[in-house]
Amino acid sequence: MKKNHRLLIVFPFLFALMFTLGGCASDDPTSAGPHVRPTPEQVMSRCLNAVATPGFAPPTESTLSSWQWRRYVNCKLGGNMLSNPKKVPLDTEAVVSIRFASDGSVVSVKLLHSSGNDEYDEDVQRAIDAASPLPPAPLALHLTRIDMRFHPVRVNPLILQGGMPAIGGTNAGAGLSDETHWRVKNCNTAHGVSECD
Image (cartoon, rainbow, N blue to C red):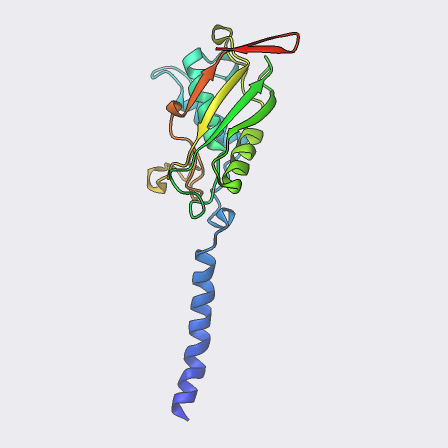
């Protein structure tokens, strides 16, 4: 009788513990915490600060130099790139071609090379949609298209300051690391025909 009574006391405690731990092991990155998805304003502010010249005020989207624009676009896309680290191996890579108008609005997105992971490919598309419009490219770049390579980068939440979401999401664990993960293609379009270098 005492053994049955002990089991009745222990079983609800174990059930509650298993239920609590099950919530921690969720595959849904949105359940990881309040800082998973930064707002567009947070991404913009963080990225403008990241490309600022030391000793000077951060630029605005309309005053970016060529090198600042490249870093800013990478940061803005990375700031919106959220993936479930349990479902995306580190060697995953998707290659995307983004065409945009002179005002920075995204005209088209073409998946040049699938990552082989449908969920990751969709995450890349969502990141591009969330980052649009991009700031207008400086005239010196002569751009209408960029090709980007997206691959996961684990984010260490310990490096965050002041509880701000990480670029790529605090708990999401995937994003872009730096400007080496994309390259610029200069394309000229006339009468519906494009020529790219």
